[in-house]
Length: 88
Image: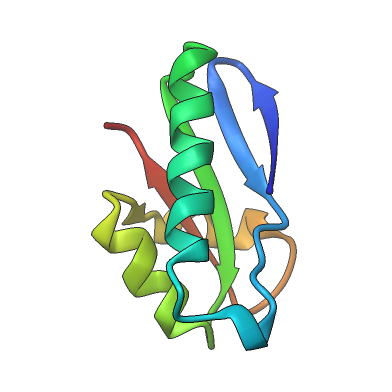
């Protein structure tokens, strides 16, 4: 996982868990780490994008307080990419 900063916001870049390791809570731990790092850096919000076919990841993000921002989808870099934000 990586974070980039822009005007008080942080973006999560390239968050992934190897298929063989999925289901063990690693994705949840990575996202929580990103949120904690963002808070420590004073970020107002944390943004990420995901492919439309990654429903398990979308449920994970929603469970951690992210919400969809469909109006930002076209800015995510291509068709099928969905934007999420966490502001809590």
